[in-house]
Length: 237
Image 1 (cartoon, rainbow, N blue to C red):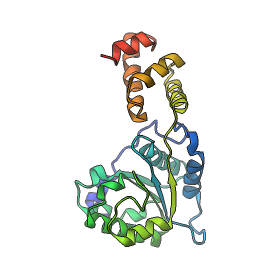
Image 2 (tube, rainbow, N blue to C red; image 1 turned 60 degrees about the horizontal axis):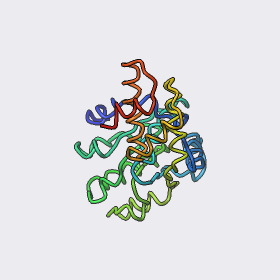
Image 3 (tube, rainbow, N blue to C red; image 1 turned 90 degrees about the vertical axis):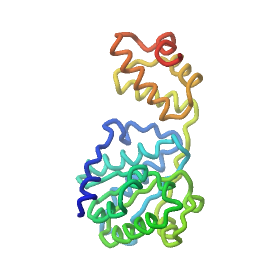
């Protein structure tokens, strides 16, 4: 594997982004299919080598890619998660040799929709993944058809594999998610405080979880419970 690829392998996964910490809502089937895809025996006949996840910003696609890598590691499989947010700043050679990894996750596919060189590089990687019988998981913000890719062969490859849309959580699901993530941190987040967050901040789940992080730090620092007055003091300025 070339040096640039070795540098990419240093990427660290967030400790808290696993399947267990992902509140599925209406996405239970997608998660189970992801697990089955990773679990599938390499000798399975006609086993698709790719899984395409899509959905609007904030539904948790990146979380699921990180979770897929953590799950693969628990199965004693090698894994790697990279985003085109960073990859586009590097040479396409960063993908060379990645087919030796059991589970390769590529995030933000929409960022190369107009880049012929990167599309060709992903297509070439896909072919090498097939030859080595590994797993490629890709995420984007639109369906394969609507993603705007200009390389027909890559579109065809992605359509041949598994595809799942990650659906956004409703308000009750978001409340449950925030309370669950708070509980994992040892925080008791009452429903009135949770609804206050939902009604006074952006409803984007990533933004809400970032707010929870900030509240957690402030709560530890000041030794106070997370109440509505405390939320107003810390976040609503």
